[in-house]
Image (tube, rainbow, N blue to C red; front, side):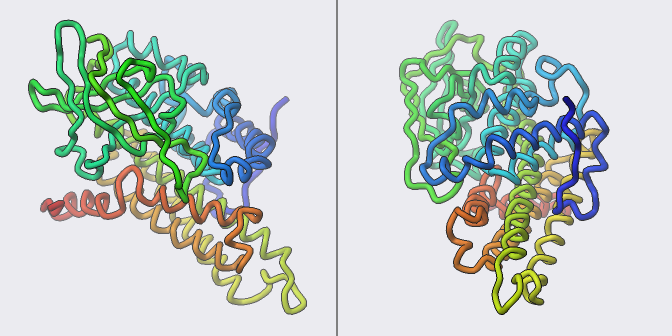
Length: 394
């Protein structure tokens, strides 16, 4: 049975029309699954800070994981469609979207971009089906924005094995992942290289980060690597410098912009529903001028954000997207998201700070998305370098 495709209220300019008929059908199936399975339970998991074990297989069955690679999806799909998938996930739950972003964009993306045909064949189908879970180990306790130069985790080739030592922080999925793509600096040449490391390898320890106020469903971890030995074949063959890491991040940064647009959209939809039902001074508060002003501002932010996302994804498809394009999308859309969730929370008054009305969850989750995949400031400097020809990072 085909799920009918219906538009969503926050897509004011009808950007869904950029999808072809097949893509609309896939979005409709994903939307139906999220509304049926994820939306009714997400607050329970968010409040508890736990991850639903059933989610990977369920999301994988919708076809939302493994997009963009012939080993995982036998059909052509546009970057706009992949971005819209991130938006659909995020408008229901940012943690779910982040889990898929790690599994699909960062882990599958690293292996798909930098792996050999044999590595792709070994890992990509199993990751796309949800049979195994992946994590992406780049950020470190002392190295975040300066990962290109400041990476401290090391790799040393000894015979037919690589020996990894160091630590990673904020690694999503890592507490329950089967494998982690670890980025480490080769002691021999000082270049950053990528490795597929099974999480049960001796010397690999992942410890959950507690007390988060954002993306509470995502199981972030601190990772320590103590003389972790992996076969030489575990090194991704085309991951030989940070430029190769950047190739992965260029694609995922644009999808994070889509995710941010989805968070803004979810907060707006929740606020719109609340204001049409909440009665004050004898009528729904949606009928008051100041509330309508806030809602219109939210809708304008969302519309502009989706427009930016659509264009940067079209540029990815036609091969013209550069680092500065994805950087501007990420910094602009996350800033608009931050304003939108604040306004959505504001029109809900005191009820906007409890998860019962959904908006509080989007409000809190926006803070993590604003920072990850490159802070606003770092992305602004990438754009600034492109337009002025002057680097101003330090």
